[in-house]
Image (tube, rainbow, N blue to C red; front, side, top):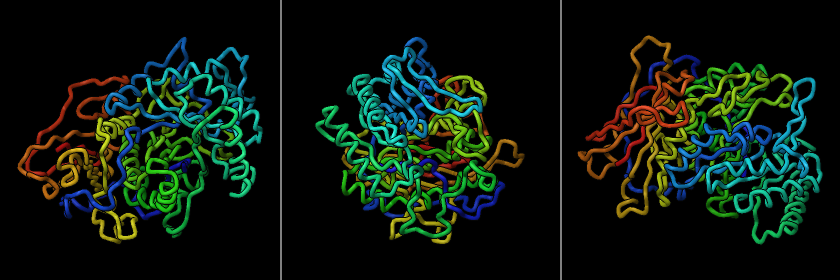
Length: 516
């Protein structure tokens, strides 16, 4: 398992203000059958969550006061795929989380006089809170490595096994260990192997139950060019704050070039551990808890959708979007302090950054879930801009005439009789930035998918992910198939279109799901 703290994109020269769409009509060409570069069968929990340990009970509540908003939002996703999103309980606070069997409350955070969260202690009630997740939710628990306290890590692991039983899927030793204790690959491996073996024997594991290599640093080989630097889209320090903008975030070329860095690792891990073994266990749009006007907007929803699908096309099995709050010890120069993070998909409780609310990005996960549906035989590929012979994305220089603004994914259901011959679904994204404050007519692009349809005159179904603009921060004007989810439940009339001819118009800052 490889985990990314922040899915920051590669450095590409992109204007900071909305511009004219480079391409207004995109005709998809090529053979419509399942390509050799298609992904493995997609995991039903592709869109999953990482929840910071210290903030876990703020999200799910406790047995006395369960958080109904979180329950409804998670149940919405599970009902669309038949499989709950997986939940990783971890993050930086996991490396300062301790077990106290006598603690009467489920979770206690020690915050010093400066407002810094120093450590977290959990008791038996914590695992009762975990049980509030949707039935069947698989849970990964992150253990403390930074203190080098084996007994402390073992006690948390033992409490998890006794507390949630079969709901516990995996354990993970340490959070981003390449950022502390001056670990080398050799001494980290030695400690990890000894701990994993001893904990497995103590707890009676008969098969491996470990999420491994929870590192944060980006690989460089073989794409070690300056343009592949990930040191962008971050508010940990002033220089990077300036480039954490919507146009820089919402661009397929930047996003794909960053994720392409991981292709050698994805291939190696899958060869050694199996097709579903590579996951991105923690990621977000703008690190150090996000940026206002970027991470809490509909623009992030489009980024999240493209990130999830492009990663899946590279055979990343599951994506755990991180939820939590700013941590004062993360960076001495970071922009955010206190409350919950601006990149969170919803605020389960009132906090210094705002009231209880759902953000536009949540609807991107609804889009993902309905794309997957209940199929267990769905595979996908990035049709446009597609991939070069070496497997990396086709950039503007290589022929993407949309300059990273138009993206098309195809989905083939190999369980259907003609499932390998033609796609059964398409995801079409127009990533051109259009803000609601603009007074110009909203641009649009036409995707012509007729060459990928068995019968281009047959009616196809279209569902839209829409908002008045990329800068929108409110879920009540963000719609998925005509409905908003601002309350945690669907509101409004369900809307889908029936179109023939294979030509679909998609507005700037909009995405559509096409069902054949």
